[in-house]
Image (cartoon, rainbow over all chains, first blue to last red; front, side, top):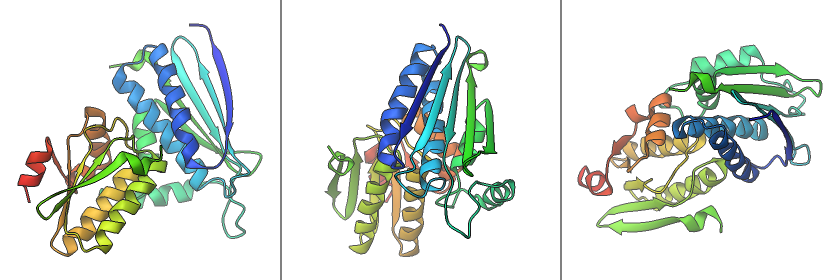
Length: 147
Length: 114
């Protein structure tokens, strides 16, 4: 399969995540990831988009940007938000905040599991502050690590 | 079709059974949470959630189920889940929610467990 590059912008509204999840599921299928791995990829996509919408972009007009790169061996997803604009909050999820979320995560808690799932399921998971003051989340799934 | 229309409510004696026929991403999870909150406000104590037709669940939806199960137990009730696909079981196991919420293979076994 030749390299392909897809860019999307969706409103900061979780109802738009399902169509993107379906697209990524089809791409994973075309790349011949197993069904199990395809389900993992869709779950990770759901979690990072939901976080970007609910925590990373305060206004629906901002939207979130997605970049998907595929080649014969991998599927890479980048999700970019513009950051919250609240005066009291940093625009991106800082390492300190990440540590706090992880430390407080418990099976009994209702939230805080999304980043844990992404870390558990993606082969590569990186988070960085972007120029807009928001967060870039990049995940990669390699076909060679298929089980 | 809204996700609410894909969540049906049935009764078996004093047990409310929610049958979900849509994937549970954040959008649908919000409707599921509203439905569960409505049952809580009606003082319903026993709930079974049938996920046999669900192919995807995210952490928001798992969190909603865990939260309601915990609240129901405080008043002597419970929420039990049944008929999970393998990938859903894996998500529950990864989060650790399978140690908090009781999961059954079938609706009948979940009902019988009350």
